[in-house]
Length: 584
Image (tube, rainbow, N blue to C red; front, side, top):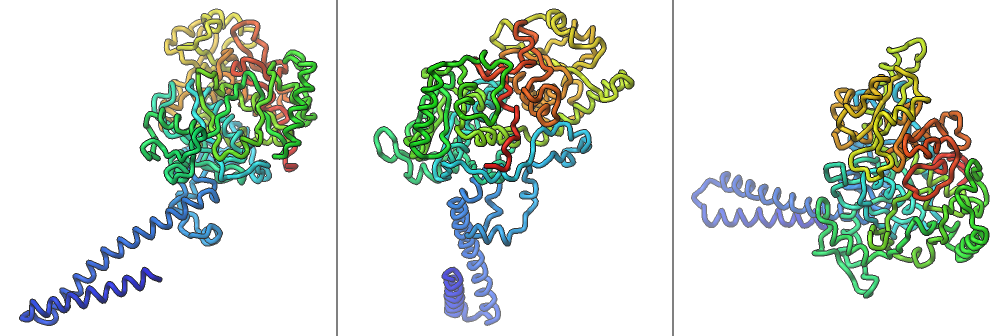
């Protein structure tokens, strides 16, 4: 209203002024020319001021949208901001028609490869191990408060170590009911570039599809809480603003940002090898006390992981029994207590001096008193924290090509195009026990493979001559042989393609201690659980390790989590994962 009144008044004032000026200085000019000049000048001025006021108005809308961003799950940068222009979110949702950008939002349901050029729906189907569970999307933690935040520092290791830590943090964020703050774009070890987690996963969709989880960028967090003076140094109690009032840290040295977040966030030096991170069923002190009493009872007759070898505990067993199984020789609980619940910001740091690092699977570290919460977290990672659709579609294209090749070699005996796979980690891998010659690998694995069968090898070994003992016996193929089928996938993502392809093999041989091999086995576990493949009840599978030899059959028998946790994945992640759906 005031904008309109102001513009009309200004229009009349400028128009009258120009006419008076023109009448006083250009009396000899025709009246029509004077009026035309006055009108032209007035229109120019009107245009300039209209643009200026529109700019101010758009800034106000943008600020309003920013303040309400928690209502739309803290959308990620350049994602949904421009589509919300109403000050009332309800009006926006009721009146808004989706534009092209919003229609591209990824959906958890199925896998549509048509936008990426195929393959067919039938060929894509086998890649899908996740599910669309509407009731899961509605679940909120009993601690839910989007006005509180969880910040974290990415792991310093290779990609799969980074992924492991990120999975743990994102499940923690939901368990704590906090808004998750993603780190700024930065270089990731061995990936050869600067990335954010949204480059690998559909985190934009995760935030939008789940009522109980908000995700924002570091820039948005600092703009909302940092530069506005809403964060305090927990040591001094004084307001602490970001270094240099900077909110944009993408591609910058994160050292000063980490120091800042450690000052304004509550930091607990949780060491996953020493304690189990435990979440009570509610915020009541009674539930916290019950967890401590439970732990004291367990330690009276402390179990070992070997006690549960081949003897899995039911996924819906009483909390004390599940705690015994997941204890893994640890002696204490790291409880999400009242102090943590009340903190505005909780920060998860990575620090070599204090040995604070989340080099652990989320399901091996996080314990929930309520078994339904526990299984929800495992389904959440399975269904949402997975690679982008274009990577799955590219992998499906390669899997089809490998199957076609295997089928063509023996259509009668292999009508389904079954193939076997290896992951042979070499390069800078520090575990010397796993560095054996290909002839040794051949000798140890030959009892599971048929001569002449198609074998897919995923490896960081660039010298193909190394694999000659295997290539002499089997029809060996590599990712390199199929890259022409997926020309739009950058080389930074080739490792992810390798994992997705190898996971679809009949028999898989991996590298012990490798989190890359571990992730392949996790995907195989998800698929086996979904398709009820032999061994799914206990979470076992036809996967093996070629070295060290005593670890060969690890995946064929049930084991609970045990140290060192990163050496392999465990059936706790996928066994009985769909129990309790709709009961939260």
